[in-house]
Length: 60
Length: 150
Image (cartoon, rainbow over all chains, first blue to last red; front, side, top):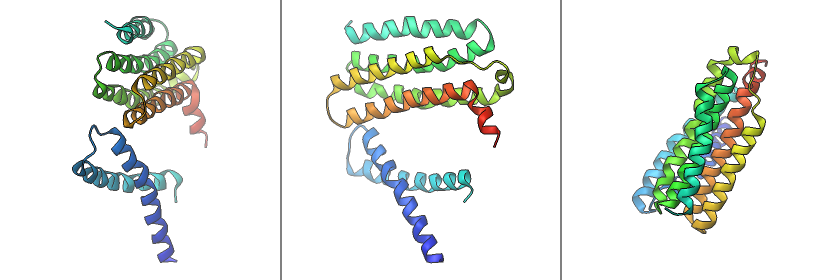
């Protein structure tokens, strides 16, 4: 049960991460490895925040 | 001066001028609706100026305004909820006119830009502009009260 819940949490964060990272790559002026790395890190942080916000709104 | 800058000047003078007049005169309901429309009209003007000056990086200004404009209106809608509850602003025609103008400007600039990452960025800005404008107008027209009931 615990493992299933962890898996769902990881899947949700990943589901937030993909569109956030894509948005970063669309909005930066030039795509290079440094921008990709910074975008991946920033998207990770925001994906965690997004999951927290979603849980706060839905109460689950 | 080219057509883009001329269009931006027209949008700024007619659209933003009219909304600024609405903000400084009249009852609260009109002021609240006009301040919402002011950012919805300034954003397309910034897109047109970026295209007119051939500086694609300038569309970042429009992006920031498309995000922060509706957020500012939501703050007003929340803070003025009690005052607006008796006489909510239903600026339906003006809201849809501003949304249509924003969509038309985004389409025109997108066609001029052509396919690529810049096009996706413009479409993101357009979605934020039109969607944010409609959501903020709905909040001003009583969406906050609806949300409070549950």
